[in-house]
Image (cartoon, rainbow over all chains, first blue to last red; front, side):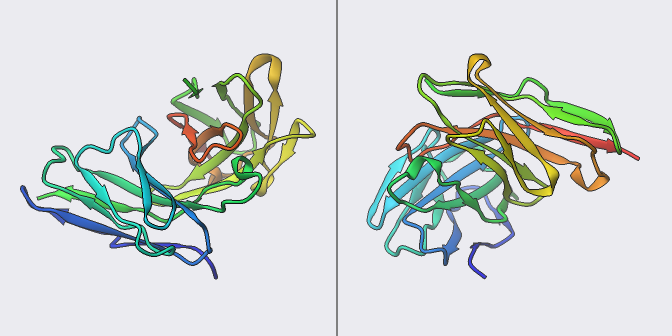
Length: 116
Length: 113
């Protein structure tokens, strides 16, 4: 079945350490997204990519970096510059067609990142 | 700026009772509107979407939503709630041609047996 796979499910980071969250999709979607979710704050957009080798900052990009070398993959690196990284991270993808706006985003099951 | 408001942070209903979750959006043109559901520790699942046509849309799991342009609302309803509906519900919208979704902060639904 097609879908989005996020790994690992749980991740722990030490102070000063960079960590990378994986997101892979086999839906043949062009657009991919990373969100951060904190209790009571809904979903906030970190980065998004409309096409391979291109990505844009979202609302809370500071302390994060991404790459989009393959259509299927959009990894997120949480750098040591992100002072409060403990959160639930969600990856999503979306079809890019003529009526782009009405296409829903499809979500992975998330990665929970915690500080040791 | 686009925004989505879900006025109710937490709602508790009895099993078998009806449910309405409120959503208001701020956007000049007709938006594309979505409702998602999230179980604890899981990703978001699409319940339904609206982009044109009939203002009453049917979704999965017996949910429906009604788009009311005059009230800038897209409320989610279910006639009879089941215990398995306990989850968090998010309303979201996108502008025409937009790559981004704007999410509300969510409404947590608890169901009393």
